[in-house]
Length: 348
Picture 1 (cartoon, rainbow, N blue to C red):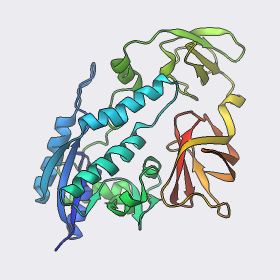
Picture 2 (picture 1 turned 90 degrees about the horizontal axis):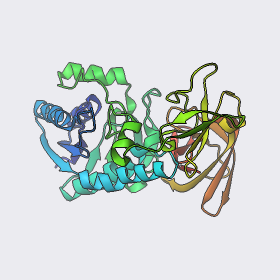
Picture 3 (picture 1 turned 30 degrees about the vertical axis):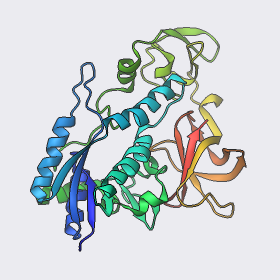
Picture 4 (picture 1 turned 30 degrees about the horizontal axis):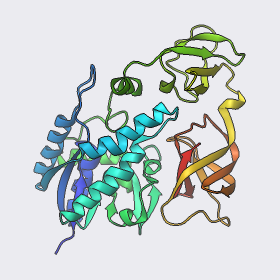
């Protein structure tokens, strides 16, 4: 009897091709659309119905079973509420990481297995081997950073077939098969907001924020901001401070509602050779002091070699070989051994 695999189909080309590959490999395939978010936001229409329809079209083209899982309530409590509360505390969270941890590789996996699945498959650009996670071969699309909080048990039940491909090849396969999503553009933005900016989303959740002062490196007030929780370390755009050199956010005080900026790109507040991490998660084993590791301090940031790892209580202090820019509390730093994802933690 063929193994049953449930493919998370988002209505995009990556998950469409994932379903096609699993079918070609001889699995008994069921497509599943996860309904995580359906709320329209001011000036923006949520596209969940269109995405659901596109996923269903592809399932029909492939001749596979198709169903929908409604995870909206769990998504709200596990991902959206977490994200909003982190911003309120002055941190910059990564909701896609929480979505993978709590929804796709926990709730979806558990529900699929209860439904009779042997495995789940997703359209992530990453690779899974024997319960370990590796970077995708397409370095431009690699999504392993977002998956570092998935556990080994879940990875043993997960397949990511496009991790060995690059994006042009995925498009080529979709066109060759005539899939309805072959020409569909990639979705932008965080997984439930889409084209809506984070400021607009937070405003829809929390209402307009109280304006406050923007203070430069000399201590002078140079303008007003629209709410300190909207800003993140290293941010350059959206400050609306005119004239002269560009300004970069170096910090913020949520209690006093102040955003601190500098025109000095070499400002020590923008650069660091240390990362302090909490809320650690290791996929297989903790880092081994005899091995060499590197770290990515945010998505698309360069990998930086780690010189030394110091452990104190539940905090890991990484001493780096080079400086990293804009270390941001709330973001994730992900540790690699070559192209294998070891794990990581939340920057403090």
